[in-house]
Image (cartoon, rainbow, N blue to C red; front, side):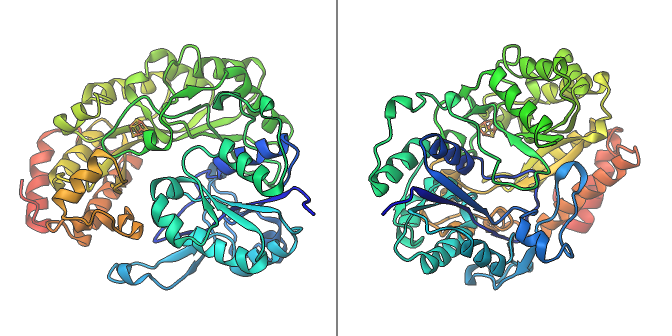
Length: 482
Ligand code: SF4
């Protein structure tokens, strides 16, 4: 007999590095809300919950305390590197809940009728695989469904190797309910199913005993098409929720769960800003919802004008990251002029005029794109530094069916179906034979030097003649030919 019990699982991260910047499995939590809405009883095991009661019960030793703004280190265990990563001179770890805690958490769950496992970055797939293996041992007769980003982008790989009974792709709310109904033999009333994503219930955070922060998505999808990005492959439409709903969601967690840190995870938060984000922030102010906001995904600098900068300052946006990526004009054009040098410069002026210190603002610069020389990355970092902002360096990771994936296949002679582990952004750019692990480390170290100096209020490249001296030094010590 079915009890309509559904277990949701967010697996571990396997990588060279990971840090909790407000992450929660929002897609899985949305599915949890939908299933509850249709009468199912859901349980969650989130391996990445730093404050899971079983972890806190055993010991708080080694548990990262609440860091600034609710971020913090995950617990980690060094594990054996997969063979294909064996030449990378870094430790490979399983981040998140210890294995015995996971097994204990499992033993506290009543027999589920269906298990839903999510997946995040494509090269983190050992996490869902391990979870599925353990879930299979614990509940051998229960059907396991795998969804999420890896399952969407590497559907065939996931079907072949994950061990899940069913692998779903794309937004999962409707598919999950259909499958759960099918397996349990229930017939949900589909007239009650929201037609649009924007009408769906908000992700449920009731599963978490301790909430240091709440991530928020006010929109899904992105109207832009950057050559390296998979946003449109995961969701090909752009939809925004009613500001009122978002406001209520934030206010509920502020008043009832005493959460003060909210991170917007939108891909395009500032699109339609008059009718959208402005309304949300004005609402927070009018209702005296005094919280901190963070924008871990880069904001579109071109959309930051004097007014929105002032509103952001007034409503406590504390972590601001801006998208820039590169100073290369051809590449900027290719990103549909998402961000030009002038747009970035103007955005920083507006933010400074509103009250922000420039060195408290991070600007994303990407390295390792196919065809991207090291000089382009250095130029981009220098430009950001010359504006007085911090460089946040990210590495390219190729995603199937994007423009840069095809370029990577041609340029790096990459296999058409490489193991997703090889697309890890820590190692992928090294495929370019002209670049080495050490050179990338040098770029990372350079960004640290620039940012360190900014912390002392010194922008090394405000005086442009320093560029030449710097390049001469780079040439001498790093063999960077400019
Ligand atoms: S703006 Fe951001 S989310 Fe949108 S396509 Fe570009 S990188 Fe992706």
